[in-house]
Image (tube, rainbow, N blue to C red; front, side):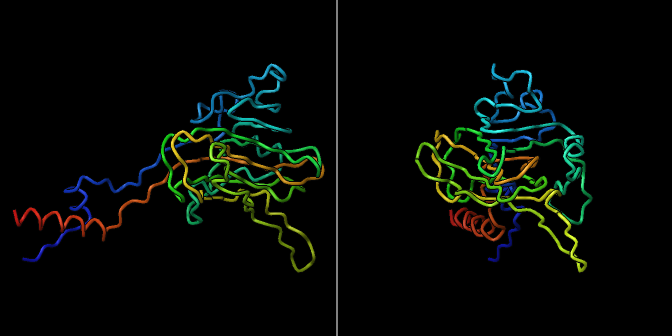
Length: 254
């Protein structure tokens, strides 16, 4: 007997969803930075510190789970970009064939000089076991003026290792034309996506660390549309068909 089973039929018979499973640890588009970063998952408050209460949302220190160890500024909407002379729209779906849309807002991480880069630390607890490669952090980044060498890192404080070692944040670079003129495209938003390289256990304390890099003057690492989540690959069509065929054959024999 010949059995033909499509992936859709296999999903129906086995009760398998075609969508990949995802658990969000941190999510923030910075569209409402003055209301606890718009209720973001993994975030409890914005600058409730008694040290600089009047600074929110424009700067100052962020209390846990968001800690800032230098200067930091945030703002909603495109005005965040206009104030810093950076791109005010971005490729929100990482698809060059679709139009860019307005940025929802942003956050700037900056330091004082080359010796004191800006550092932002976001602390979150792993809600479940996360196999290596299935923790994914993605965001859009831009660089303001002279800043270089921005990095992202995910430190597993509980295990004392890096789930993601310090990794250089990608940008659009600087292009020099035939006449020797430099065109700085780092101020335009560049999509970044990185995966964890070590297993994470449920309950592990994680720190997502952004470092602005060295800088001279009024500069910074800019972020928008940040997500840290677990991503479990969805079953392949071939795998579904094979499993389903096995189930049908066993049922046929009984």
